[in-house]
Image 1 (tube, rainbow, N blue to C red):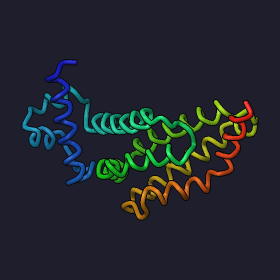
Image 2 (image 1 turned 60 degrees about the horizontal axis):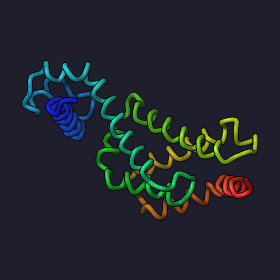
Image 3 (image 1 turned 135 degrees about the vertical axis):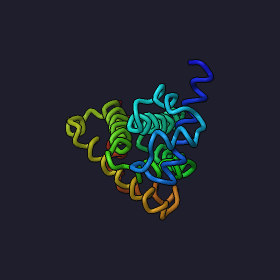
Image 4 (image 1 turned 45 degrees about the horizontal axis):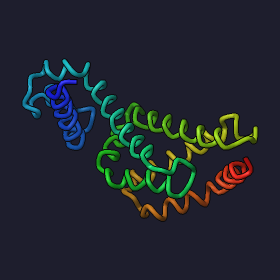
Length: 188
């Protein structure tokens, strides 16, 4: 992709995020974005269909950044280190993730994040579990829903406990699953 196109898209997205923080999604217009970015309105439409498309691309980008960060982590298990890395990344980028959650009228961000977490949990459990009770999807959906709920609570309440505390508490709750996975993995 041409560098100018990348720069323009990044400018539009950065401007959109700034306006999201100031006004909220409902009050943002394409004119607002174009004026703030000092570009033509047509330029915004050249890259994005409308503000919903821009929100969707923004969510896609930040979920992908989280995924890439976690994928670069050497630990892809249901371990304290894996969970801690997720919370550390969100803590470092708290403002943007809080914005995306707070402008969740349509559930795009939560839906994408849920899908990512559920897929990861399914892969971790499916790859290490021979127990049929864990292969029907109930456990992976339960874990993903619980994790997303805790993550939302943590973000919406401005991180009421530190990363170490929340990951420790989550690991205590996940112990039945992590014990099962570790014992299954070690026996193979």
